[in-house]
Image (cartoon, rainbow, N blue to C red):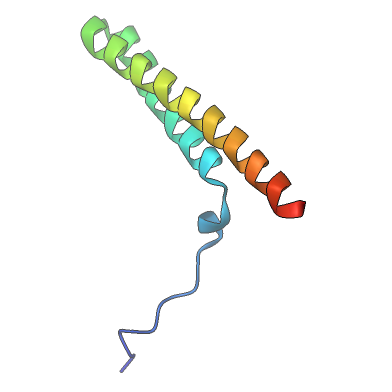
Amino acid sequence: MKNPRISKPLAPTQFKDRSERVRNKSEKTAARGKKAVDEGRDKKATRLLKRAARQENRSINIEERESDYSLKKIL
């Protein structure tokens, strides 16, 4: 029987930068928005595309903070 307190090793996907994860999420959301446009569901499409744009902006800001943090860490 395994001890439940021992954690599993990290998966390779957990080593990605946070900005990459948010960017991937925004791409998935944008794909769903484009599909809604094709189906003619305008209200859903605008909602999803706006969300994807916000997520994209967030990933850019996170990326800038990550680079600033890595520069500070080096110096």
